[in-house]
Amino acid sequence: MAAPVSKATTAAAVDPVDLSRGIAQARADFFDTKIHLVVDRHPVHRARTTTAWMHTHRDRIELHYLPAYAPHLNPDELVNADLKRVLADENILNPDQMELAVRSFFRRIQKLPGHVRGYFQAPHSIYASTI
Image (cartoon, rainbow, N blue to C red; front, side):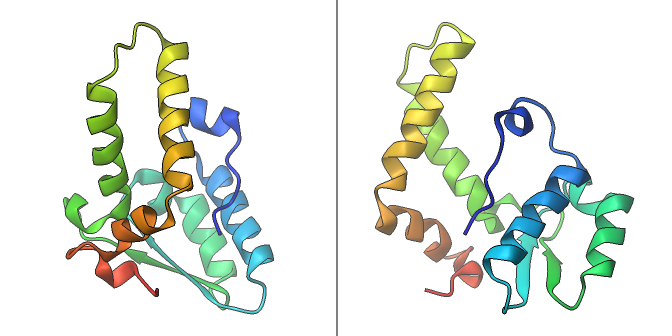
């Protein structure tokens, strides 16, 4: 289950505190299960604050880093590619239209669990699937 993301978080860069809050929410949702997160090498994932927080909670959460320069292993990149394909057909003239188009895309795929599952069952990202 994904942690909720505030509009403030999406409007600016995510910082280690935001990441820690999101992980803490995931811990609350899955309190009896150790959480394994597969993350890219974004600076927020490697920040001193994040590393210290993860060390404190290492019995409940473990980060697994994707290799550098390996976007094909990151299911998020498959989502990004789909979004870019959809946006390429749109006539977007301002930030509000962009936000509406992006939200519309995510609402649409949210109703397609088989499509979402496919992001995790692609040949290079099947490692992330437990389905």
